[in-house]
Image (cartoon, rainbow over all chains, first blue to last red):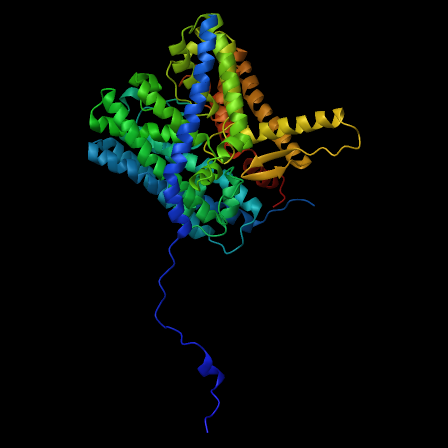
Length: 63
Length: 501
């Protein structure tokens, strides 16, 4: 007669080895985003400089 | 209820200030190493003396004041203010020993100007200053711009949840990531990535301008720290004009703008959300204000005949407008010209730009774009309320990372700080009047000191009266910490004076 299994034996086996640390996905994406961020700042500065150039051009016409 | 701090409170405040002093001492080893490499023997000793005193004092305060008491917000704020007062005490030592400062007060002024990223200088003969000492001036800006307390505690003391109170005290209200240590790491990451790319670009531009590769590297590193941390010190007394390079000035423009962006905005951009740059209330406010002020400046210059042609108007005028608005303080022209050649209107726009400043949570100073933006939005809402029927519900929204509804207390808070800033600016200006300086000069320098703008009309020089130097030091500290931390420390000091301890 087969004896019922104890509850402990039903538990899944636990691998005693230390699990590898999950990669920091957020940090990785931040590093990848670095160049995107710098490009955005450069474009913003360029936009401001172009607007500034338009102002300087108009003012130089008057004086 | 009376505020009655006990010995434990003072131990806590001193303990954290000691940690910061210890960290500043360790950072002094960087210019000491450069002095050793360059054979600047006197400077090696000067930095070792300064570092030893800072490390010993820092360690001693840690040993004698160690406590397990929890750090509250008021402790954190007072600690930050005390740290910002004591760190320059030690940072000034190698400056004084270099022989380029007339007194210890001048060296302390220079240290505070560096830490608070102001850019006003009292150095004698800057062009012949030892390179290690000049590097130290720029490193002070880098440390101060990043936030010395948070930098030191996250790098040298392992950070921890307690750093949160100190983070707020340094004028950084917004946590970008869920905890302060990760936020500080992100700030470091942004700074280091920009440092790598920015320094290489500046190095290349300086070589094109005629410097040797090694000299270009030295100047590039220093200029990067001055521009990104919106500091305004420069390796040469002629500031950026020394290099006579449009390419260099263009690169510096981008770096200054990057420095004036909040780290929260950098985070959004680094996440790929480029739309944030055009939707954010602060970027919009600053863009409108910068362009409007530049237009007025250009008209002012045109009327006085300072610059009437397109190229110099854009090159010098726009560079100064950006330098002032980002509160950097780098200049392509000598500061005396603002008074002698620019008339009245153009310098007034520089003062206004410095007064407004950059974004909250950036390395820039001033009132900040978010407060101006919120006040303008509040005003618009009030006008609409008057115009629309009485039962109409008027909601004003703004965008800062997400869409938000404007609340009364936000407008009230922004208006209160706006008023405090005006008092700070005017207070320094009026103090200058007592010593016989003209209002325009006194107000210009006062705003430059308090807002961390750093452009100067030449009032700040070694022979300036010492009480004005002291007032400017106070303005730099109060402006950089945005009032609250200084008020907290003052609260503890008043408690001591009144015997409520």
